[in-house]
Image (spheres, one colour):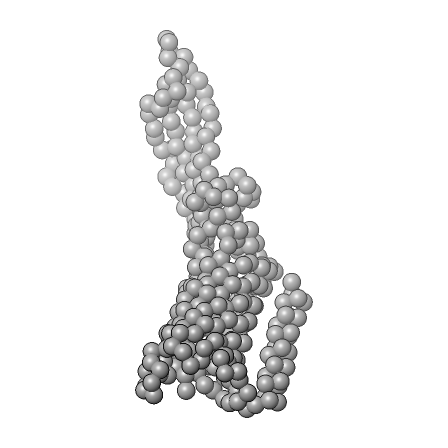
Length: 294
């Protein structure tokens, strides 16, 4: 993954540079808009093996020896929860001073995105019943069983700072309602990457009479272990396709004419490279923001 990841980053930089040179050969680029937006990313549900590899590579010892012996909460195959990311973006838009079509315009958007509280949560558990001795008392049958409950809980909390570059095409520049689409990419690294792991185990005893439980008692208290590490940074590369719409507050020559409210959804692929591990996963996002156009 290392060489392809670096190659993709180099290709992104080369593409941005070549497009910028092409644009500057036709017309001078000038800053025309400033955008602040908030959006949330959602990821697919097949993330556990990636995270398991990640915590193992960073030296966490509280990892089951055989994951197949456990059920991944909340009881769906390969399910995870807590995989939403909150994102705050600051973007500066550039467009040519002339040469644009009457009913559309396009611009480069360059800025930074801050991922706040990237949180992944995984919980595995199993409940093993060990059948014990059987006793006969008259017509009654008594059995003594031992139940062993065991769980593993993992959480990852981190922030990430990413460079955001996109090429956006707009429609209806003179209308109050407009739409846009384009291509973009983010590249950056995680910051303050903390991983917590918890292991809990408890044993209990049950006495059953003719198939019915008549007595229950704990054999041991809840044995708990915990571990926390400051993990190495993870490098991210996220190509995406943005689609959105906007509403300009006014058409007349007033201050409100420069402000517009936008909503956006994006679809993309996230590629990450960490310590001795790598991953690729799909994501989509939904959000909105405020844009000031000069």
